[in-house]
Image (cartoon, rainbow, N blue to C red; front, side):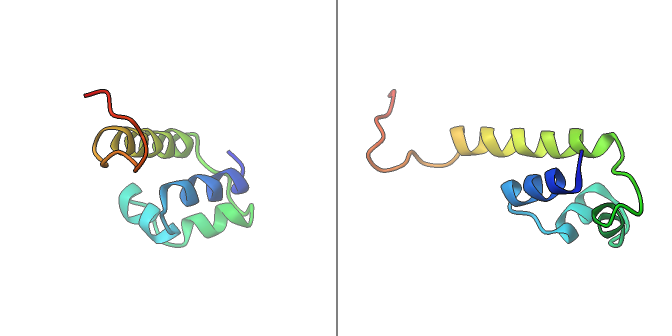
Length: 74
C-alpha cells in the first residue's frame, strides 16, 4: 500500500489519521512516518482498512435509509 492509497482509504472511510490510530492501536505519529516514507506501511494495514471499507459498504447498503427516488425491493 502506498501513502496515497492509505490517504484515499482514510478519506473513503471519513477517518482522520487520529481515528485510524485509535482504532488500530498504533502511536499517533506512526501514519506520519508512513506518509513521509520513513517507515513502510505494514501488510496488515490494507487488510484493516479493507475490513473498514467493507463494513461501511454493508452499512450504507443495509442500514442507511434508501435514497430518495430509488425504488425499494419491498
